[in-house]
Image (cartoon, rainbow, N blue to C red; front, side, top):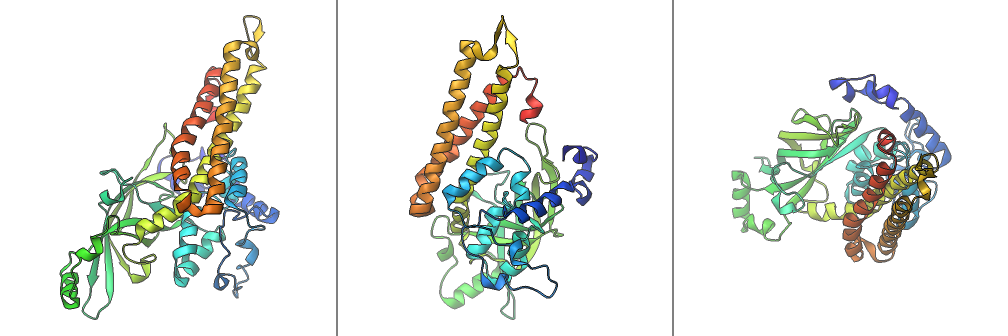
Length: 384
């Protein structure tokens, strides 16, 4: 995988040729073993399971071999987290899983047939655009990306999307064919004001409730109005060819079929994808931290200082013990949250969902940091 990507530089890292062939080979193997779409929380709609004349719409390419609870799938996420490839080759990687859940729960049949089906089959990838560079996007009320509604003379509705997003995972991926964009409704166009007067109600009704103006729209990718300005790096890594991008949306014209669930339902949609997604991310982080912990243990049995192996020194034993405690705490806290989602629903488990978002990254980061310290930095590349 790494050897293949290393052959490319600059803009070539974001082309189809840069995608390692091993990905597709492992996808076929994952499907044959039944490790495909195991994240799916609900049955797939029947209209997506009808075989087409091309013969490539096999049900086995979409449906999981077994339906798992959030807790059961969380345990598998820990195993997949030990490898950077496992989530993708099992079609269980972000942001595709969250986008598939949105389309599965809230999409129309047309949206599902056009975008959900190829995502379930692993034929395309997707992006989710929410975070913005100029505002604190954790508060959806701050979003500045606008979806201007225009009512044309014949009564048809069109929308024009404008704004900036960043940390948009997958937007530069050459396989990305659809993006879900969180935006704020804009009813300032004269046609909307005239329509509101005729209906006897102002547009303020749509924005009276905090968070009620956010809307999710589907943007086909690539799109002439969507400009991926640059890849963003984390500690120098661009994670090509998937990566994270700064995206400018410039006069992107959409019709009514692009709106998911309805105008002003964006906050509801965003929240619905966060609960299970937090379980996936946290348990994958636990898996990666567990791998680093094991590498740290190996190191302590290989190196000696002052006539003793590292594991025989009290200070090193303390690092090992603290790391084991942090791992178990992160794992059990996340699985307890998953259990609550299974029994109470995401809304009933929102306190623990918030808790693992803050706590698990801190716990797992401490484990990785200790592993780096014990390795004397020699194995930083292995941990990365």
